Length: 157
Image (cartoon, rainbow, N blue to C red; front, side, top):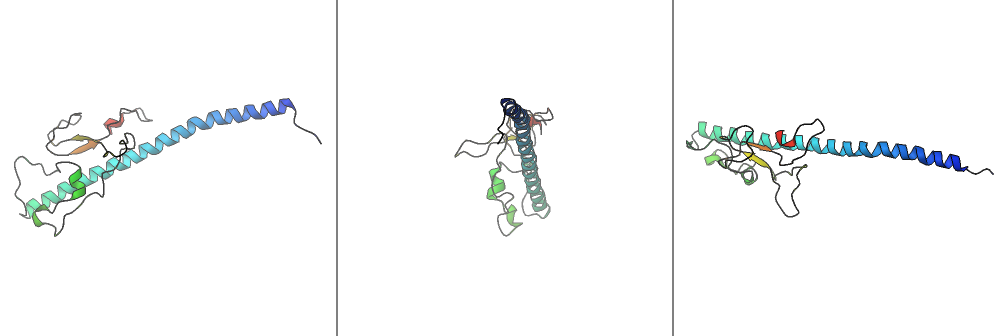
């Protein structure tokens, strides 16, 4: 019966080390890419809910269910309104909800027991504003300071 020589054993360990050194960065990149895909999906979900809320508001105004105020844009006052719902002056026989819950930012997860935090922009804010005007929620963005794989900032998505 023949055993392994020390040279064969060292070569095997070296090859395994090279393979492991290639696999670790690859798994990190895959994990980051999965989080970025989730962030894109979540931003699309939130922005679609905001747009649907605005469409329902505009329909309620067109159907004379609510009287438009000069100071209101038709977007929700905060993200929680998308979860609790609105009846839009009787446009719907129930409170129409646009989200089941406020989704979590995968790049900026909340602390345990805290609500998810998103950067908010109101209708009157400038497009790249980092401070929310507080009138309504026209757009959302990630509060993460990180940089994406493509070199862009998560805040700019």
